[in-house]
Length: 204
Ligand code: VGL
Ligand code: ZN
Image 1: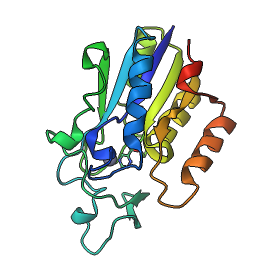
Image 2: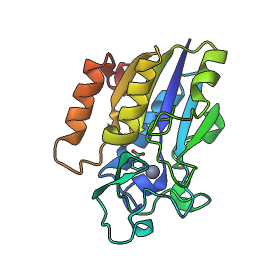
Image 3: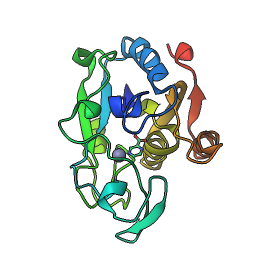
Image 4: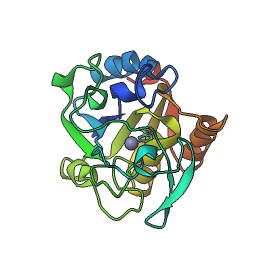
């Protein structure tokens, strides 16, 4: 059985948002068209407390885009984004929420970032997504969303490592590209790890 996984389709990652991804809103119609083809639709939601360690404002002397060490892990400094309860953290209304079967929130612990929908960046704590999928015997995942080079990439790599069959819906993704080419490299990495790559129109 299969599931569609929508990664972080939240206003802060859309044009005009706090951590805007160029053309991020173009993922929404791709997602909405696919939603109708799946019985099970999962959404992940970046859901940070205001004092989250990934925000540059919470690490005096740092600037956005800089990489520092937090708890022994490299951590990119981001603008404050997807703060719990704010509009920027909400899922885009172009996504029919009635068709979302379950939402998994991540990045809730102030000290730990979580790009993947499955684990925090240190792989210490699970979000519950894998248990949920396994319970329903969902082994084939179609994944799209924001951002290609962060949350989509780490969600796909974790899914592959956990033994799911993964198809990346490439036209349903857009990347941050802090360094030019990051998204292209992320897609190559996902493919090399075993992900199939398709466009939304190729999904039956
Ligand atoms: C993301 C950076 C920080 C993402 C989340 O959704 O890709 N990127 N938090
Ligand atoms: Zn975040």
